[in-house]
Length: 113
Length: 112
Image 1 (cartoon, helix red, strand yellow):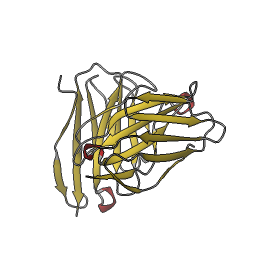
Image 2 (cartoon, rainbow over the protein chains, first blue to last red):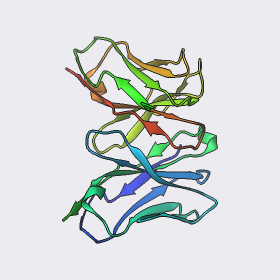
Image 3 (tube, chains in turn green, brown):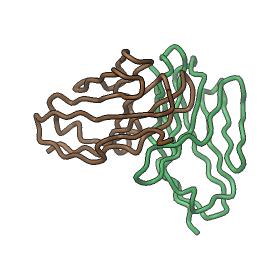
Image 4 (cartoon, rainbow over the protein chains, first blue to last red):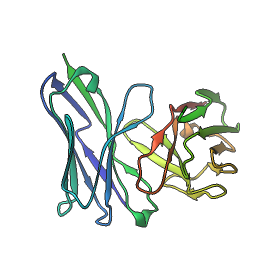
């Protein structure tokens, strides 16, 4: 089955700097890669997703890149703000798995003012 | 819209006791999911449902049962709780396969 590895487990940046979180997946059939943000005491919330027919997607300060050959994808946050502090999860899925999401272990991002 | 709601928010059980967690969604979603979240392990899928009256096993189904008698509700049951089931449980729903999953606020369960 699918396995998703996420790095780093913790990341601390200064406000205004960029943050990058990386994930690798094992199943070459995976074709859907969402990123979720989880604030303390809340459920995860989708912030951006990418499908395997594109290599990059942007939404304001957030971007995701996908390298299907290497089977890895990354989340890029530019001009970080204190409110970006949270735990971020990557995930992978495909129709063969019934659309089930397999999550990475999570990255705790801390943005220091 | 309330989105996805979960009851209860907190619960403490003794080993061997049983309980049911209730998830409700008001978005008319076909798909519903139960996850557990443990430190350093991300979210792991317990069971899911692709429509009213259907259920299927996820990654970690042992010790849990589910039912989807109504489209808007998805119940997770623990028949005989064990300390290893101490976790935070999240319910989610989605319009379809490979669509955004909307998560509830979670239930923190402690089994002593």
